[in-house]
Image (cartoon, rainbow, N blue to C red; front, top):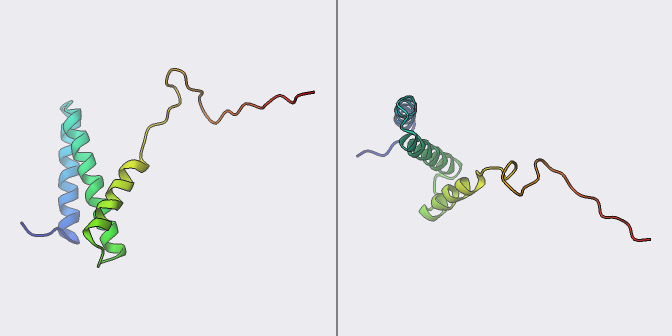
Amino acid sequence: DKPLVGANLQAHLEGLRDQMRKAAEDLEFEEAARLRDEINRLETVDLTVADDPLARQSQVELAVEDSRSAQGRSSAGKAGQRGGNVRRRKRKSR
């Protein structure tokens, strides 16, 4: 198993994207989500190593964890949540 760098990585990512699209078309959403997450992980690793070719494994793993936690869903629209950026003004005491 050779390390994926440069064109090899891009070809592998394109293959994963094709598999992800096919899985989504076949209504295999869990598989499509797993492939999406793997694509994001590989892209993050590639960017981290491109920024610092001598990056330690711990730095790469930290970057992957940061990219996972940076993504999230909005709480707007969930029960008990206010949508948007609505802020209440406090009443002034007289």
